[in-house]
Length: 121
Image 1 (tube, helix red, strand yellow):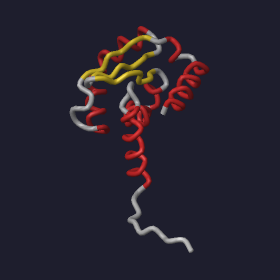
Image 2 (image 1 turned 180 degrees about the vertical axis):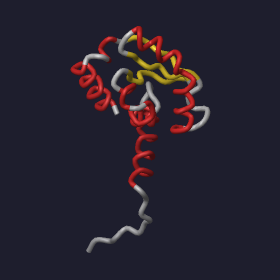
Image 3 (image 1 turned 90 degrees about the vertical axis):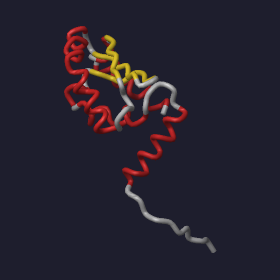
Image 4 (image 1 turned 90 degrees about the horizontal axis):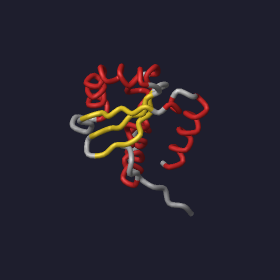
């Protein structure tokens, strides 16, 4: 006869955040909530043209599709940091560094990058 476990029921979103945090402890390059919620945080338009690449010591490195987007996002940097503070928590991301990566703009490369990134997690 199997024993039933007694425990409280919690929302899936809370469990998912806990799992992402645990994964993040072994992931060297990116804060797990930033990666998991990037499209939600920056919006669909920017998410198509950017990919978070690295996170260390409060600085988030984000790959952008072109030099034009690099310049545009430079103007939006403070707004993006504020959004990240609201969504992830205050003091997590202190600065954002943008780098150009033309593969971000190519859907086939972006899909492979996201798949590869998902396999790392």
